[in-house]
Length: 237
Ligand code: IPE
Ligand code: IPE
Ligand code: MG
Image 1 (tube, rainbow, N blue to C red):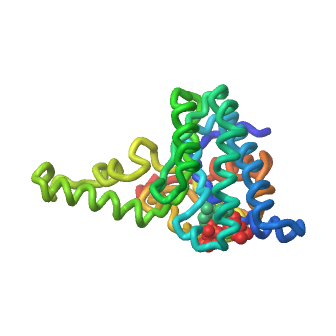
Image 2 (spheres, rainbow, N blue to C red):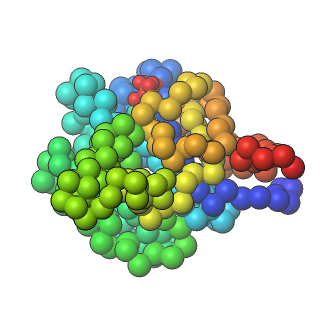
């Protein structure tokens, strides 16, 4: 493997294409999501081994509740299965898990699983894995604006004190640096309500590979592409 100049500190992934992968294999969409979970397991190991410090994955959007009930149920079950299968190993590897999104809509069983994986991995120092679940970037911004508006109304804060840093700190991602690289699989080239504020200066990498097929080789290709990018932030170099 060639020597890479620059490893992104934070990679965010829109894990798309499980349904199409399943269709091609003559399997159910739920089986596609199971294969997607295996791909995520591999990706976590490979990202951590490459020196990535934060990996955010879009696992379930607020819009995904509108899918057929059987698929939604299978995805919720998969969250619980994933927590059961992965927590111990993640804790051993020093991977800290954080959840972003609105948890209030999940069942008690899913809420308990999410709390369990967060608390059992809280001391991890190797990498932070952020799971976006019932996540919507617009809702996240609405919640942040309401939060700040309440502080202004109560006199705790003056409107003119609100700056970019304060808004960043009011988001679910308050303690997490902005993503350096955003990957979307399956050939779609859109954000689908993911990290819109945080993506201001992210590099984007789109691939036709379907998420269950996104292996180490594919991650390495994305890392190679990132290493070739020239991030100028509006300046002249
Ligand atoms: C992404 O795969 C996983 C989730 C959105 C939960 P999809 O289920 O969107 O797969 P496609 O886009 O239908 O192939
Ligand atoms: C985005 O994928 C959400 C996740 C990967 C969890 P979708 O498949 O839901 O997005 P659209 O419908 O193609 O925009
Ligand atoms: Mg999709």
